[in-house]
Amino acid sequence: MKVFVTRLLPDTVMGRLELSKEISELRVNREDRPLTRKELEDGVGWCDIILSQLVDSIDSSLMNINPDLKLIANYAVGFNNIDVAAATEKKIPVTNTPGVLTETTADLTWALLMAISRRIVEADDFMRSGKYEAWSPTLLMGSDVHSKTLGIIGFGRIGFALAKRAQGFGMNILYSDVEEKSFASEVGAKYTDMYSLLKQSDFVSLHPFYDEKSHHLISERELKVMKPTSYLINVSRGPVIDEKALVNALSNREITGAALDVFENEPDMEPGLTDLDNVIIVPHIGSATLDTRTAMGNIAVENILAKINNSDLPSCVNPEVL
Ligand code: DGY
Image (cartoon, rainbow, N blue to C red; front, side, top):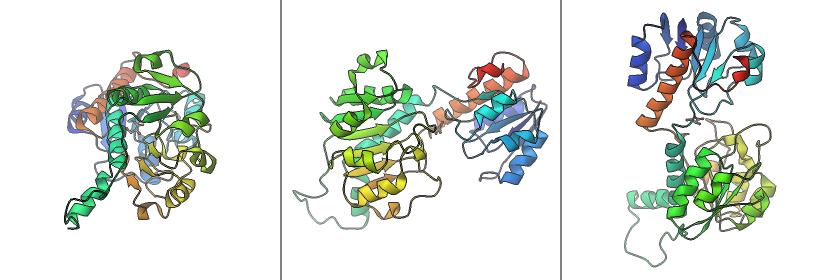
């Protein structure tokens, strides 16, 4: 089968694809940029299997270009770039890369939480610009993390992994989700509704599954419920936050700070966001370690090989098509 890879993956993953005897032809975008729509359309028209990225919009009209498309193997745990309902209707299996990025993404969430509360980015800028003259009792004061309350919205794999880290810091852990999770007691996390979580938490971290129900889950109303001393962290999907409302809340100091790995209109950012000193912004690097990005690639390759060999797909998100 012919496999189309929309962007270069880590070397060992590319090696596996290039050396595979099962793949008859491989077409790879070797340029360090996302494909244009036209290039994506050409590739989809040519291939049997597409190994896609979050930035590739795999919608119904793209799938229509190739009625014989056999598999969409997405290189991410999330798959909001794919119209899964359309793929299901056309009987195309869609796979993702779950599990392997949980701890790595929780690590970045923790790094952002620590960095925003202790003003690490501001402090680094301060040093580099030669402003440090003498120790001062009030210089760059931040907020404690230990013993504070962490509210986790969406208590799946990553939320749970974050709670494990928070336990080590003696935090009081709250979580909200569509239903109570039995495993929450393992990390001492208490279930509550989202508004009471927002009211009580010193740190709010977002980890919901992104769909129409979680679109703008955090907007003006929710930001007003949060404590003025609190921080918001988002490593899930940008549109979970109404970014305009967040810029207003941060400008008016309705909350103390925010740390964001994802943005509502990625790669663009809401005007005003980059002018604020109480926000840390990083470019969607939650899973960006060599080990994890390699492991994600390996899962994508295993899904592709399974499809070619007609065996069970390790991580299919629409198994009803099988
Ligand atoms: C995902 O996998 O969904 C992340 O957003 C990128 O690793």
